[in-house]
Length: 385
Ligand SMILES: Cc1cc2nc3c(=O)[nH]c(=O)nc-3n(C[C@H](O)[C@H](O)[C@H](O)COP(=O)(O)OP(=O)(O)OC[C@H]3O[C@@H](n4cnc5c(N)ncnc54)[C@H](O)[C@@H]3O)c2cc1C
Image (cartoon, rainbow, N blue to C red):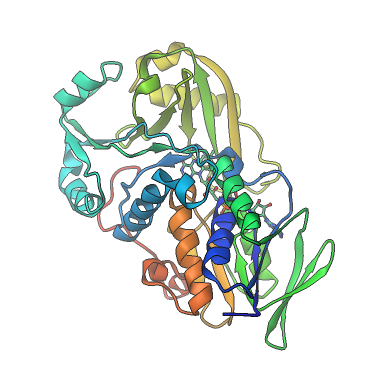
């Protein structure tokens, strides 16, 4: 593909990954531009907990997550710079009644190295004495899981993209899009642009952009957040935990702080600026997670962070080409989980742009599934995950 121009709208971790992949896989004459409204990162990427795990409830999600963790493990070799990948292990806590379902997912998860480990309640209690473990609970441990730094990752992708000849333009907000004479015409706050291919990776704002083309994208803004506590050194080297029994999740950091997850607000109608958490939300996050780690209740709350991400009706992203719109590609609606799959999403969406075909790995995530009434449904579901 030579003498073509591709514009990627949105320079968060997803758009930056797509742009870098495009720059690296396309011919030299292929001009790739990455546009973002802001110079600093201000979208969901800047506030992410950065949890990296393979465990999901759908084989396609597991494949994207597994491919991405492998990439994060060697991020510096591939991209240069840092992704902040910290191999602190990932632990999913489940009720015994989920064991049959978990073994199905585990079959997909263990296609990637290293294999996960199944821990009984006695093993959990022995390994993690700071946690309260019920006799009817068990855990699935991923030794290469942990967390990364979404901001550092996005900046590394951006920098490598520019180093490979990509055109990064910040402070450029796309205000209008139309199709004319077989090309995309973009109106921005600074100039007008033309492109052969357009990739919309604008987070929760993607729906507004698609509306300019009379395309309905079922992506709404929801606010999610983290309460940060400090002062309990016990779990600082312990695993990142998603607790399917209580609905809590937490990310211990080596400096003794722990980020506690706060659930998405059902729908958020004032997405900018996303307000920090309320005291009630912080209290609820501490209460929920201290059912598992009782010392969290005594730790000092040092802060909170919150932002909006785009959510779809089935909580899965919308990826790949839009069939009826030649040269239009989507990567949005990550529903609170875009960081852990950004490397794989970047590779496959870029592949779709370059080849003009939908890669198998993202075929299930096409926009038309909603119109077909064919939403993605987990093969086996747990209580919260
Ligand atoms: C508190 C919190 C915790 C999270 N924890 C995790 C986690 O543990 N693991 C995980 O995998 N994910 C997590 N996520 C989700 C993850 O961070 C997001 O899914 C991911 O960052 C989305 O990246 P993005 O590039 O799609 O969107 P964004 O980072 O929102 O980037 C979109 C960009 O598009 C730009 N843009 C929008 N409109 C325009 C326009 N008209 N013109 C130009 N530019 C435009 C915006 O300026 C923005 O920079 C979390 C998110 C939050 C908020």
